[in-house]
Length: 503
Image 1 (cartoon, rainbow, N blue to C red):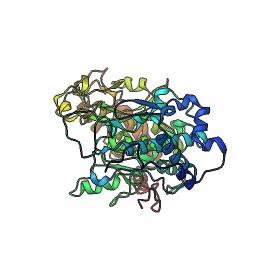
Image 2 (image 1 turned 180 degrees about the horizontal axis):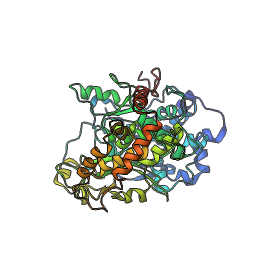
Image 3 (image 1 turned 30 degrees about the vertical axis):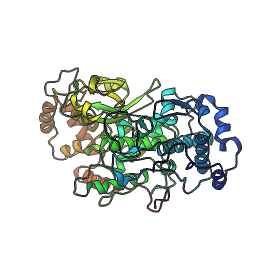
Image 4 (image 1 turned 90 degrees about the vertical axis):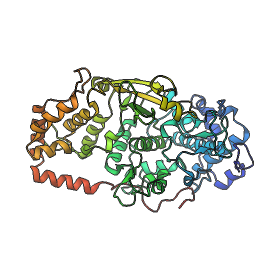
């Protein structure tokens, strides 16, 4: 039987005492801390299933007690927050009862406040732009309303009351649970390396998370008869941080969509909001599938400020052959130290808007509404009658349809980073011959304005030859590749970690 958001199932105040209370005063009581920080508190908003905005100071007593209990459990390091959770066995596209939706939202919002109040990271959310703060503290950053339609919903689920996953996560089957899972992992408490990925700044932390994804995750999907059953093993964040059976790495089961969500979840755990976006495969946006199917998942950091960074396609981090790379210091002709190499990797794949525009990408953040504009195809109308929106679009390649700009961009990465695909050609002495053909094929009929700014073939050949020499020749390079492949998956979640009483 569906448990309503406001019901006798809500935990009473007595549970706070059962969790215990960490010492320290106001920072351990969310009401007092929020009262002292009204600029943050006003973004703590629950959007009910019927669209009503309920700011924190207007929450019902039951909602406040539930939020306080979850916060108290976090403060007391309770082994189990007793959250109401979805059942992965019921499928990958589930509706979310209102009480479950509130639990997952309230637990994560409470964790954001706890991390801020206890100064657990070197930055603060206090001065963050409103649109970014809302991704951390408003329920619209966690669940989406169900649009009333003629569609028959599962028993106990009602439009205008209950919820579903955010449009960018529809049908992934990857759900939120205990908010401490990501925090404990990112800070090194539960990772195999024991090394914190939290840097001195948000961007340094995002760089570390990018390097972690590159080195520890593979692209899905699972193509075998047991795909659905095996995918359910990836329902929770802690499962997505573990070695996937039969591999040495973790699995982004739905490719860029899963990878983008993984970075969103990990970054949010240390109070860094990321905007999940979609980029169209072609400039017209009209193909033989819905908007959700013909787009790639990407991310934007700092979209509410003056210096955003854009990852147009999450697969560019970890799913290219060039994820194994050997950047060289142009002055000394020696390999860059790992931290500098990781920074170069980050700067290569996370563009500024101006850099991405210069590569031939039309960058424009816009909310996509089913049946309108980019989502006006008939396939969208059939597949989206329960969605109010498709989320945010980051843009499209101007030259798509007349060439392969995204594939040219991959070679741009390999040039900047001395990626394995380029050095492989250098080891065979075929850089000029191969890239002359490849570049002509990918350029197609694109104009100079539409084509990514890829260096010429002579520059590629010179750079690759120089890098190969700096690495000690072809044999030494191949040994480095083997070493890098063997090291993949070396920093995942330790096996003994347990959350939510699920293990």
